[in-house]
Amino acid sequence: MRAYIVIDLGFGDAGKGLITDFLVRQTQAGVVVRYNGGAQAGHNVVTPEGVHHTFSQFGSGSFVPGVKTYLSKHMVIHPGALLVEGDVLTQKGVNDIFSRIKIDPQALLITPYHQAANRIKELARESRRHGSCGVGVGETVVDSLKGHEDCIRAGDLLTPNLLLQKMDSIRVRKHKELLDALGHDLSSLPTISEWQVFQQNDLALRWMNSIHRIIENDLVDLTDSLSKWSKDTESIVFEGAQGVLLDARAGFFPYNSWTDTKPDKAIELVHGCPPVSEIIKVGVSRCYAVRHGPGPLPTETHELDGVVSDHNQYNDWQGGVRYGWSDQVLFKYALNAVNGVDLLALTHLDVLNQLLEWKVCKQYPINLETGLESYQSLPLDQKEAFTHQLMTVDPFLESHESNDTRIIEVVAQTAKIPVSLAAHGPKTQDVTIIESNAL
Image (cartoon, rainbow, N blue to C red; front, side):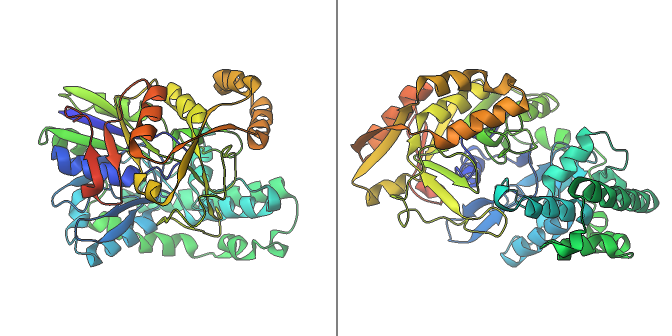
């Protein structure tokens, strides 16, 4: 069995959904494993027939008949949103979608209390917001890292009495945490609708009833389905979430994720699914920089405004999508953070047709490049200071003719490996295999 691990080498939105769908179709993969992140993902796939879906928790290979999704123990599940997404996919013609997904019983679950607490904290930051998606992923992960015994995992759905006890405990604890942290009457803030979540005595029972279909459809895996499925397919695609530059450790604090966005968790899962013949890390990058929400984007430019058209657009939590010229310094940093990749996929190359020139940053001031080398080992206060420097840097930009050949050459020089896949649009047929032996 070959394992393809899809890794975003930027701040997210690189085209992981497209590349996952492409790999599934090209390698006849039978399973997509969501190996990290959570319900905040937005991976866009457009089928050859033109059907579009933004995959959040289901694997991005789900339009291919029979392809299964496994939500690993490292995923953070929003159970209500999972059911809604499954219903939407059913409406789009994937009629057996709930029979093709399993959830590891150790996967963390987001509750309404986590989501509300996440939103209250983000709103209370006012102009200093971190760019949270407002789903509650980080809040749930932090509880787990702190070792709270009331953390809810997918397997707890099978024990309603225990689940209700944990929900009551979370409600009381989160209520107190918010008052202690923010120190004032939260009903007077723009957070009033979120604060009311903690005032509803019947919310836990209503939430449990609303997600009962997860049990009815036997979605919680009690039989080690991933190991069984891996024996029935020649390849599996491990679909990553977010991007390396948002990683809990490698990302730029405080505008980073609480989750591990690097491939380590996927590699751990692969070794638990023998027999494995080969692990192939697939790095995905746009031919320009992109970021959804606040935080550093050193090569940000308005020259790409109106040129790029994205499925993921403005939302009330992250704000707008921002664009920049190609940043080979951060691209190299991301590659080093994941110990390199085996294949490179360069996406959104169709944008080049609308540009007379393409710009690229190959170097920063020497102090910042040196700082990047030690960034991951810095304490948080020094990380935040470095992030501020990154947000104010004036990058050195080179201009090149806007064509595939030159851009692919520059990216390959940075990565020290060839670009294997080039995408000129949102569909699998828009992806070209450049290296004949790439897959």
